[in-house]
Image 1 (tube, rainbow, N blue to C red):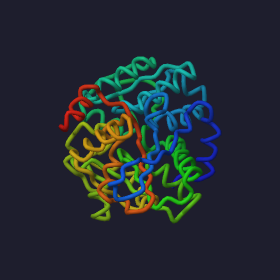
Image 2 (cartoon, helix red, strand yellow):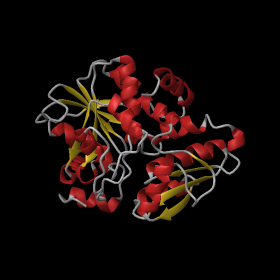
Image 3 (tube, rainbow, N blue to C red):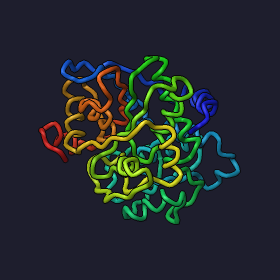
Image 4 (cartoon, one colour):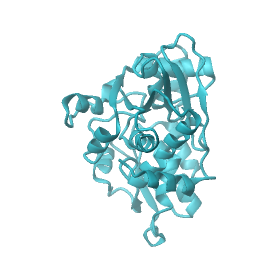
Length: 315
Protein backbone atom coordinates (compact mmCIF):
# COMPACT_ATOMS: atom_id res chain seq x y z
CA UNK A 1 0.00 0.00 0.00
CA UNK A 2 0.94 3.67 -0.18
CA UNK A 3 2.23 5.11 3.10
CA UNK A 4 -0.38 7.30 4.77
CA UNK A 5 2.13 10.07 5.47
CA UNK A 6 2.84 10.23 1.72
CA UNK A 7 -0.87 10.80 1.09
CA UNK A 8 -1.12 13.54 3.70
CA UNK A 9 1.99 15.18 2.24
CA UNK A 10 0.41 15.01 -1.20
CA UNK A 11 -2.68 16.72 0.13
CA UNK A 12 -0.62 19.69 1.32
CA UNK A 13 1.38 19.72 -1.93
CA UNK A 14 -1.65 19.98 -4.24
CA UNK A 15 -3.86 22.11 -1.98
CA UNK A 16 -5.23 25.14 -3.78
CA UNK A 17 -4.62 23.64 -7.22
CA UNK A 18 -7.25 20.91 -7.08
CA UNK A 19 -10.86 21.09 -6.01
CA UNK A 20 -11.98 19.50 -2.75
CA UNK A 21 -14.88 17.80 -4.45
CA UNK A 22 -18.27 17.40 -2.76
CA UNK A 23 -19.71 14.15 -1.45
CA UNK A 24 -23.44 14.24 -2.18
CA UNK A 25 -26.33 11.89 -1.41
CA UNK A 26 -27.99 10.40 -4.48
CA UNK A 27 -31.74 10.70 -4.07
CA UNK A 28 -32.94 7.47 -5.66
CA UNK A 29 -35.45 5.89 -3.25
CA UNK A 30 -35.53 2.57 -5.10
CA UNK A 31 -31.76 2.06 -4.72
CA UNK A 32 -30.75 -0.90 -2.50
CA UNK A 33 -28.38 1.28 -0.47
CA UNK A 34 -27.85 4.82 0.83
CA UNK A 35 -25.63 5.99 -2.00
CA UNK A 36 -23.18 8.89 -1.86
CA UNK A 37 -21.32 10.26 -4.88
CA UNK A 38 -17.77 11.63 -4.72
CA UNK A 39 -17.86 14.05 -7.67
CA UNK A 40 -14.38 14.02 -9.16
CA UNK A 41 -15.97 14.96 -12.50
CA UNK A 42 -16.02 18.51 -11.09
CA UNK A 43 -12.22 18.84 -11.12
CA UNK A 44 -10.89 21.54 -13.52
CA UNK A 45 -10.03 18.84 -16.07
CA UNK A 46 -13.23 16.86 -15.42
CA UNK A 47 -11.34 13.98 -13.78
CA UNK A 48 -9.54 12.91 -10.60
CA UNK A 49 -6.29 12.53 -12.58
CA UNK A 50 -5.21 16.08 -11.79
CA UNK A 51 -4.47 15.05 -8.20
CA UNK A 52 -1.91 12.37 -9.00
CA UNK A 53 -0.37 14.12 -11.99
CA UNK A 54 0.26 17.32 -10.08
CA UNK A 55 1.67 15.54 -7.04
CA UNK A 56 4.05 13.58 -9.26
CA UNK A 57 5.31 16.50 -11.33
CA UNK A 58 5.88 18.66 -8.25
CA UNK A 59 8.40 16.07 -7.02
CA UNK A 60 10.42 15.65 -10.21
CA UNK A 61 13.77 17.48 -10.02
CA UNK A 62 13.96 20.39 -12.44
CA UNK A 63 17.09 18.83 -13.95
CA UNK A 64 14.95 15.93 -15.21
CA UNK A 65 12.42 18.16 -16.96
CA UNK A 66 14.59 19.57 -19.75
CA UNK A 67 12.58 17.63 -22.35
CA UNK A 68 9.31 17.92 -20.46
CA UNK A 69 7.07 15.06 -19.40
CA UNK A 70 5.31 12.25 -21.22
CA UNK A 71 2.65 9.69 -20.33
CA UNK A 72 0.47 7.02 -21.93
CA UNK A 73 -3.21 7.71 -21.43
CA UNK A 74 -6.67 7.14 -22.85
CA UNK A 75 -7.23 10.82 -22.17
CA UNK A 76 -7.74 11.83 -18.54
CA UNK A 77 -4.18 11.34 -17.29
CA UNK A 78 -3.06 13.17 -20.40
CA UNK A 79 -5.15 16.14 -19.34
CA UNK A 80 -3.85 15.99 -15.79
CA UNK A 81 -0.23 15.85 -16.88
CA UNK A 82 -0.72 18.58 -19.48
CA UNK A 83 -2.21 20.81 -16.78
CA UNK A 84 0.67 20.10 -14.39
CA UNK A 85 3.26 20.64 -17.15
CA UNK A 86 1.70 23.96 -18.09
CA UNK A 87 1.88 25.06 -14.46
CA UNK A 88 5.60 24.22 -14.45
CA UNK A 89 6.31 25.73 -17.86
CA UNK A 90 7.51 22.50 -19.48
CA UNK A 91 6.27 20.58 -22.54
CA UNK A 92 4.00 17.55 -22.28
CA UNK A 93 3.46 14.70 -24.75
CA UNK A 94 0.65 12.17 -24.41
CA UNK A 95 0.72 8.80 -26.16
CA UNK A 96 -2.91 7.78 -26.75
CA UNK A 97 -4.61 4.77 -28.36
CA UNK A 98 -6.12 5.42 -31.77
CA UNK A 99 -9.57 4.89 -30.26
CA UNK A 100 -9.19 7.62 -27.62
CA UNK A 101 -12.32 9.81 -27.28
CA UNK A 102 -12.19 13.09 -29.18
CA UNK A 103 -13.54 14.97 -26.15
CA UNK A 104 -10.46 14.00 -24.15
CA UNK A 105 -8.06 14.64 -27.02
CA UNK A 106 -9.48 18.12 -27.58
CA UNK A 107 -9.00 18.87 -23.88
CA UNK A 108 -5.35 17.72 -23.97
CA UNK A 109 -4.79 20.00 -26.96
CA UNK A 110 -6.39 22.98 -25.21
CA UNK A 111 -4.04 22.46 -22.28
CA UNK A 112 -1.00 22.55 -24.56
CA UNK A 113 -0.24 18.83 -24.65
CA UNK A 114 1.13 17.16 -27.77
CA UNK A 115 -0.95 14.13 -28.82
CA UNK A 116 0.76 11.06 -30.25
CA UNK A 117 -1.72 8.46 -31.57
CA UNK A 118 -0.57 4.83 -31.71
CA UNK A 119 -2.26 1.42 -32.11
CA UNK A 120 -3.78 0.03 -28.91
CA UNK A 121 -1.11 -2.67 -28.47
CA UNK A 122 1.70 -0.11 -28.78
CA UNK A 123 -0.08 2.15 -26.28
CA UNK A 124 -0.48 -0.72 -23.82
CA UNK A 125 3.20 -1.56 -24.24
CA UNK A 126 4.08 1.96 -23.07
CA UNK A 127 1.99 1.39 -19.95
CA UNK A 128 3.48 -2.05 -19.35
CA UNK A 129 7.09 -0.87 -19.72
CA UNK A 130 6.82 2.67 -18.30
CA UNK A 131 8.49 3.99 -21.43
CA UNK A 132 7.79 4.90 -25.05
CA UNK A 133 9.90 5.47 -28.16
CA UNK A 134 7.16 7.71 -29.55
CA UNK A 135 7.83 10.84 -27.47
CA UNK A 136 10.64 12.42 -25.46
CA UNK A 137 10.45 13.50 -21.84
CA UNK A 138 10.36 12.21 -18.27
CA UNK A 139 7.80 9.36 -18.26
CA UNK A 140 5.09 9.72 -15.60
CA UNK A 141 3.21 6.46 -15.30
CA UNK A 142 -0.57 6.98 -15.22
CA UNK A 143 -1.11 4.17 -12.70
CA UNK A 144 1.84 2.67 -10.84
CA UNK A 145 3.84 5.80 -10.01
CA UNK A 146 3.64 5.94 -6.20
CA UNK A 147 3.44 9.74 -6.22
CA UNK A 148 0.46 9.50 -8.56
CA UNK A 149 -1.22 6.99 -6.24
CA UNK A 150 -0.53 9.20 -3.22
CA UNK A 151 -2.22 12.11 -4.97
CA UNK A 152 -5.19 9.92 -5.78
CA UNK A 153 -5.33 8.83 -2.15
CA UNK A 154 -6.28 12.34 -1.05
CA UNK A 155 -9.79 11.48 -2.24
CA UNK A 156 -10.02 8.86 0.53
CA UNK A 157 -9.16 11.39 3.22
CA UNK A 158 -11.86 13.77 1.97
CA UNK A 159 -14.50 11.02 1.90
CA UNK A 160 -13.91 10.04 5.52
CA UNK A 161 -13.94 13.66 6.65
CA UNK A 162 -17.40 14.07 5.14
CA UNK A 163 -18.75 10.60 5.97
CA UNK A 164 -16.69 9.05 8.78
CA UNK A 165 -18.13 5.53 8.71
CA UNK A 166 -19.32 4.39 5.29
CA UNK A 167 -20.14 0.71 4.90
CA UNK A 168 -18.34 0.40 1.58
CA UNK A 169 -16.48 2.46 -1.02
CA UNK A 170 -16.69 1.48 -4.70
CA UNK A 171 -13.98 2.67 -7.08
CA UNK A 172 -13.60 2.21 -10.86
CA UNK A 173 -10.52 0.17 -11.76
CA UNK A 174 -8.47 0.82 -14.86
CA UNK A 175 -4.92 0.10 -13.78
CA UNK A 176 -5.47 0.37 -10.03
CA UNK A 177 -3.84 3.69 -9.19
CA UNK A 178 -7.10 5.26 -8.03
CA UNK A 179 -8.43 2.33 -6.02
CA UNK A 180 -5.09 1.51 -4.36
CA UNK A 181 -4.55 5.17 -3.50
CA UNK A 182 -8.01 5.56 -1.95
CA UNK A 183 -7.82 2.22 -0.14
CA UNK A 184 -4.41 3.13 1.31
CA UNK A 185 -5.84 6.35 2.74
CA UNK A 186 -8.90 4.57 4.12
CA UNK A 187 -6.73 1.89 5.74
CA UNK A 188 -4.74 4.65 7.42
CA UNK A 189 -7.84 6.22 8.95
CA UNK A 190 -10.61 3.61 9.20
CA UNK A 191 -9.19 0.13 8.51
CA UNK A 192 -12.56 -1.65 8.76
CA UNK A 193 -14.12 0.18 5.78
CA UNK A 194 -13.87 -2.06 2.69
CA UNK A 195 -12.86 -0.59 -0.66
CA UNK A 196 -13.93 -2.53 -3.76
CA UNK A 197 -12.77 -2.20 -7.35
CA UNK A 198 -15.29 -2.11 -10.21
CA UNK A 199 -14.49 -2.98 -13.83
CA UNK A 200 -16.37 -3.13 -17.14
CA UNK A 201 -17.35 -6.73 -17.81
CA UNK A 202 -15.58 -7.11 -21.20
CA UNK A 203 -12.20 -6.15 -19.66
CA UNK A 204 -12.38 -7.27 -16.03
CA UNK A 205 -8.82 -8.54 -15.55
CA UNK A 206 -8.72 -7.81 -11.83
CA UNK A 207 -11.99 -9.67 -11.22
CA UNK A 208 -10.64 -12.71 -13.07
CA UNK A 209 -7.33 -12.50 -11.25
CA UNK A 210 -9.03 -12.13 -7.88
CA UNK A 211 -11.12 -15.24 -8.47
CA UNK A 212 -8.03 -17.22 -9.52
CA UNK A 213 -5.83 -15.89 -6.75
CA UNK A 214 -3.17 -14.96 -9.28
CA UNK A 215 -2.86 -12.67 -12.32
CA UNK A 216 -5.05 -13.66 -15.26
CA UNK A 217 -5.34 -12.23 -18.75
CA UNK A 218 -8.73 -11.57 -20.36
CA UNK A 219 -9.84 -10.70 -23.88
CA UNK A 220 -9.93 -7.02 -22.98
CA UNK A 221 -12.70 -6.06 -25.39
CA UNK A 222 -12.86 -2.29 -25.80
CA UNK A 223 -16.11 -0.44 -25.04
CA UNK A 224 -17.41 3.08 -24.47
CA UNK A 225 -16.05 2.70 -20.92
CA UNK A 226 -12.64 3.79 -22.19
CA UNK A 227 -11.16 4.92 -18.86
CA UNK A 228 -11.45 1.57 -17.10
CA UNK A 229 -10.80 -2.10 -17.73
CA UNK A 230 -7.69 -3.75 -19.16
CA UNK A 231 -6.59 -7.09 -20.62
CA UNK A 232 -4.29 -7.75 -17.67
CA UNK A 233 -3.29 -6.36 -14.28
CA UNK A 234 0.12 -4.70 -14.24
CA UNK A 235 2.62 -6.86 -12.31
CA UNK A 236 3.44 -4.10 -9.81
CA UNK A 237 -0.24 -3.40 -9.18
CA UNK A 238 -1.40 -6.95 -8.50
CA UNK A 239 0.18 -7.31 -5.00
CA UNK A 240 -0.83 -3.74 -4.12
CA UNK A 241 -4.43 -4.38 -5.14
CA UNK A 242 -4.57 -7.70 -3.26
CA UNK A 243 -3.31 -6.02 -0.10
CA UNK A 244 -5.36 -2.85 -0.24
CA UNK A 245 -8.71 -3.88 -1.71
CA UNK A 246 -11.54 -6.03 -0.38
CA UNK A 247 -12.54 -7.44 -3.76
CA UNK A 248 -13.50 -6.66 -7.35
CA UNK A 249 -16.77 -6.67 -9.27
CA UNK A 250 -17.55 -6.68 -13.01
CA UNK A 251 -20.29 -4.44 -14.42
CA UNK A 252 -22.15 -5.17 -17.69
CA UNK A 253 -21.71 -2.40 -20.25
CA UNK A 254 -25.48 -1.89 -20.48
CA UNK A 255 -25.56 -1.28 -16.71
CA UNK A 256 -22.79 1.31 -17.02
CA UNK A 257 -24.79 3.11 -19.72
CA UNK A 258 -27.91 2.97 -17.54
CA UNK A 259 -25.96 4.52 -14.66
CA UNK A 260 -24.74 7.36 -16.90
CA UNK A 261 -28.36 7.94 -17.94
CA UNK A 262 -29.62 7.88 -14.35
CA UNK A 263 -27.02 10.41 -13.22
CA UNK A 264 -28.09 12.85 -15.94
CA UNK A 265 -31.83 12.37 -15.55
CA UNK A 266 -32.07 12.12 -11.78
CA UNK A 267 -29.10 14.09 -10.46
CA UNK A 268 -28.10 16.37 -13.37
CA UNK A 269 -24.57 14.94 -13.23
CA UNK A 270 -22.61 14.07 -16.37
CA UNK A 271 -20.28 11.08 -15.97
CA UNK A 272 -18.19 9.22 -18.50
CA UNK A 273 -18.47 5.45 -18.67
CA UNK A 274 -15.77 4.75 -16.09
CA UNK A 275 -17.24 7.44 -13.85
CA UNK A 276 -20.56 5.58 -13.70
CA UNK A 277 -19.16 2.09 -13.00
CA UNK A 278 -19.21 2.39 -9.22
CA UNK A 279 -22.82 3.59 -9.23
CA UNK A 280 -23.84 0.75 -11.55
CA UNK A 281 -22.32 -1.72 -9.09
CA UNK A 282 -24.02 -0.07 -6.11
CA UNK A 283 -27.41 -0.13 -7.85
CA UNK A 284 -26.88 -3.86 -8.41
CA UNK A 285 -26.36 -4.30 -4.66
CA UNK A 286 -22.61 -4.92 -4.88
CA UNK A 287 -21.82 -2.52 -2.06
CA UNK A 288 -24.45 -3.89 0.30
CA UNK A 289 -27.44 -2.10 1.81
CA UNK A 290 -25.76 0.47 4.06
CA UNK A 291 -23.96 3.72 3.27
CA UNK A 292 -22.11 3.19 0.00
CA UNK A 293 -19.74 5.75 -1.51
CA UNK A 294 -19.32 5.69 -5.29
CA UNK A 295 -16.42 7.48 -6.95
CA UNK A 296 -17.58 9.41 -10.02
CA UNK A 297 -14.06 9.47 -11.41
CA UNK A 298 -14.65 11.67 -14.45
CA UNK A 299 -17.15 13.33 -16.74
CA UNK A 300 -15.30 13.53 -20.06
CA UNK A 301 -17.66 11.76 -22.43
CA UNK A 302 -18.09 12.41 -26.15
CA UNK A 303 -21.36 14.19 -26.96
CA UNK A 304 -22.35 11.55 -29.51
CA UNK A 305 -21.96 8.76 -26.95
CA UNK A 306 -23.93 10.72 -24.39
CA UNK A 307 -26.75 11.31 -26.88
CA UNK A 308 -26.87 7.60 -27.62
CA UNK A 309 -27.07 6.76 -23.92
CA UNK A 310 -29.79 9.35 -23.25
CA UNK A 311 -31.77 7.83 -26.12
CA UNK A 312 -31.84 4.58 -24.17
CA UNK A 313 -29.08 2.74 -26.03
CA UNK A 314 -25.52 1.63 -25.29
CA UNK A 315 -22.75 3.06 -27.52
